[in-house]
Length: 214
Image (cartoon, rainbow, N blue to C red):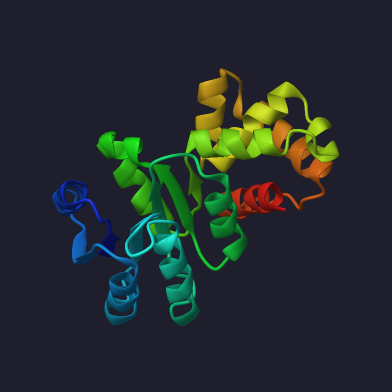
């Protein structure tokens, strides 16, 4: 799997490269600024881009903007975004792009190598994975929405876990309930939110994220 990495901190960038290479990924380019990221993505056309939100020259949202810009030439490019903090605006902008699979992780999660590697693989496979803290922030931001208020506490929990990319089996294990119970909660969630239920987990996650973004 071919990957482009964009991270301005040299130590973290080298750490990412070593982690990825140790897990059989091919890092075809590693850059430290927005313009170089666009060039690397359009030149190498990787399977996944791993991008720091804040890159030179502006140190605001340069990495995110560069990735979204590259998607205009590379439709469907999977992107894993790394951020130091929960930044709702950036998360929402990435979700609203809706041009391909997305991962949004806090940089602390990189320390959990297995989780980080699994996220990269899932995003490359077309899944959308959101950091639990980002999901919580988005849900809190929308907590006064009438549709969200209609959800029970149990349904809120299932919704949050779905948005993190969990399967029904994983949700059931974490909540200590049966998969059948999770399926029932999921059906009620989609009904209350006016979303079409789907057997496809990726479509289910994207529908939930689309709602959170809306």
